[in-house]
Image (cartoon, rainbow, N blue to C red):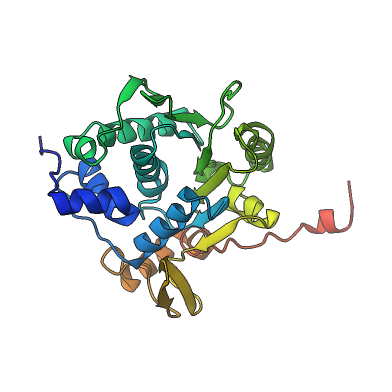
Length: 296
């Protein structure tokens, strides 16, 4: 078994203060023997999440392709970093299935039980841990829930929505409505304080009417949109006063996936699926002739 990472004092101090620096040992803990293919996009994600942590952003939507550390950053590293700095915080994290939710809880627990994490955050102590929840000695917690699961009696300071819909369900109007209802009626009402509470959604696009599209239409979510291949020039914040000037056709992380690799994925998946999942631009469905005519 590969030993968990060890951090020297400067790295520990950086991990306490900076979410982007914290992501690296989290990745090493969860992927022993693998090297993190970092890049400006991880700085952009960490910066956007840290602004939520400081209360500067109350509603955040991040859209990005699969396999770009979305869950590690949003559902594992961010709550672990926040709870390390403030063990009284309360997190609810929702995913589309209990299996995925429980897996993310296990990943979170693996991080907060490491020696390097305990060194970085000595005030963080676990009072109770189960398959769905880790509670601190100061009554803070990270609790997992899943689509359709009960959240009665639960409340949180920060709610995180991580992949509330799986790709196989995206074509179903009933499944999309179920996700919307869960966001508005069930999960979204769980903020302990509506004035200070924060909501984060981090997704890949699957359909024009998927959870990310629904939240985008609300108009009150700050949107960090990260395409695999940029379709236009864009200035993207990667830190306080720092901008990455992304140019058209620039890939998100060439160390992870080159343009040639992404074009091969496009050919394999088909243009429509690639446009949704990798480019965050799901094609708008045209109503059928029967619906346009009002026929029954």
